[in-house]
Length: 327
Image: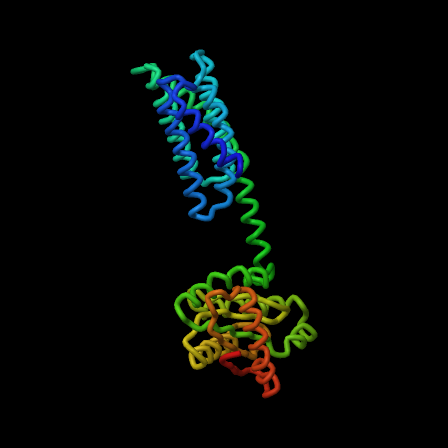
């Protein structure tokens, strides 16, 4: 970043001296410097560290701008233009999205056109030369973006999606719950709402596996997962967090609201077409998150709090619901 800040400053100083660069190119060079600085400030304001790194890398092109600004060889100027555009677009393709990359490419095209126009190039020659330099310079970036980066991003997203989901039921796993909880907890904190969790444990599930076999037990879990998803509301986060343990994370209005949601889940499972039929014990807890609460830590506290009423339901005979409010 030090180089990224120093290069535009040095170039501005050289431009201010007035006799370093060819007069017809100083305006173009100044516009390039302003563009770099504006881009860096925008990245800084948005907190986009990747874009700050991009800005620092793009400043490498300023070295070529000096060549362009001082050279008397027209062919050398065009070659430097091509290399500059290639550097800018390749770095942009490594960091930016498709729409932003298109903006960078258009900006490069306009920049080349302005430079050529400043040298007196006009008409068809201006258009053809601009198009040729821009296309040749943009091509490496497009190859990087579509040939390597996009497939790699898809693979990363697919791998992350697999890592967040339980392979048996398709529900979120503990890692997926931690990721999904961040947004839900943040929204609840911003709106001043309570966040509740319903912790469900399948009653006597060991007996299901012992009597009917593990394949039957797996099918029971799959059917149960579908039943829970059907009764969950939009925005609720449903996860399998253990062998026969499930949880639903939701924004709630209080203990009555949470208890009603827990009863809907219990009744839905009791009537689900599992073979053999099963029931669940449900323990719930709700807390009011603070704005600075870490979503994952907050949910872990909620789950630990819901574990107590879940055990109370188990001791009372199972197939019931109990919730608590507060720490």
